[in-house]
Amino acid sequence: MSVLYEKKERVAVITINRPEALNAINYDVLAKLSEAVEAAAADDEIYVLILTGAGKAFVAGADISLMKDFSPVEAKRFAEYANAIFSRLESLPKPSIAAVNGYALGGGCELAMACDIRIAGARAKFGQPEVGLGITPGFGGTQRLPRLVGASKAKELILTAESIGADEALKIGLVSRVVPDEELMGTAFELAGKIARNAQVAVRQSKDAINRGLQCDLATGLSYEAQAFSVCFSTEDQKDAMNAFVAKSKLGGFKNK
Ligand code: CAA
Image 1 (cartoon, rainbow, N blue to C red):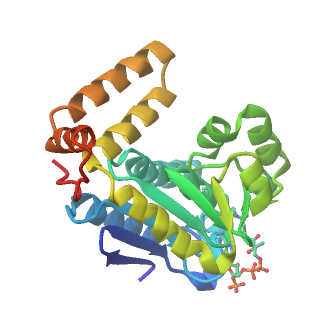
Image 2 (spheres, rainbow, N blue to C red):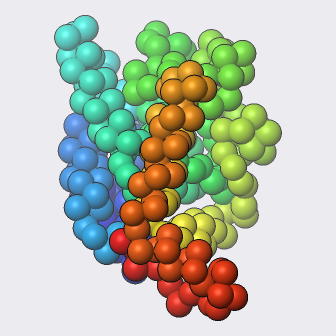
């Protein structure tokens, strides 16, 4: 299986599994990734997704052997198929964490950027090497990278095709944490656990408000936030948590409704 799907309590772990090709993305990987994302989306027991790679890479890009003889039409079809899956992951109500365990190049960096949170093991490497292959980034790199790190740094990375290490990725805000490699999955589960223990309606409304707000002007974003805030007041969790606070009692946990 080119993509593995495991459930661990409230967490779905999706592992890109073509280690012999450093998890390079082909149609089979995309189809299986899509199935895994849809399985996590449909499973009410799952609150958080973790994406990682088998072996020494997260994902070393789209599959170059597959792309090398593409016609323009085939290239567009490949990019649009991947974009649809990455955008689905990005807009999924449930949050996702990319646990970047090694090379995250080209399509791999782009997959990590479609996740909500990126954490890196110390040996992780990030980059968009496409212009060195005679192409542009094709799975969202020209769009998500500048939104995450600003236009100047994004252009530096994309136009030079140079990769950066985990510490530099942290410095520019491409990842939110760097941890020793052996602690990467533990840290990802710890973060996922913290998210899973919070009120899920509020978690999902927060993610949605952030994502929508990043695409629009401040006033529109603030109205999305007011709407998200208001939705939370229809939940038992909001009443229970606020009543518990006022009564100085401890809430046992959320009902997630
Ligand atoms: N596509 C296809 N195969 C790949 C691959 C890729 N993106 N990356 C690695 N592989 C394969 C290698 O061909 C090799 O296969 P063989 O054993 O059959 O020769 C195997 O994985 C192991 O790779 P290396 O021997 O090259 O491993 P290394 O440790 O010496 O080097 C590396 C690692 C620096 C990441 C190097 O593999 C590399 O440069 N890979 C390509 C990275 C790249 O350019 N990615 C961008 C692709 S374009 C893209 O992603 C477009 C887009 O936006 C959609």
